[in-house]
Image: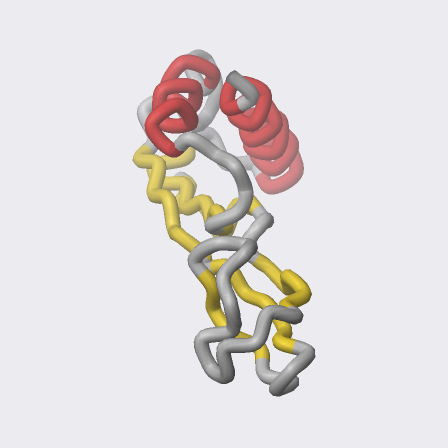
Length: 113
């Protein structure tokens, strides 16, 4: 379950930011997760609750924002959204797609006090 290590990375970032900016509590954390990031959201939510104990983010609301998969179609040279890495281009039906996004995971923002 790599979601536990992802949550530990989030905790590290929260701790670093709390020290740098002097806040004591995170009330809400918004996390962007790409369609192809390979993150099991229920497992991440569980891990977040466990790992954040004793940190400024203990009890914080975790909001997960889905990001679409994106690819550049070399047949029609249009960037398109795709649901699966092997999908054809929804614009022209071509099969020469280069993934351009959807594998990222990042903290979008935090509400702090």
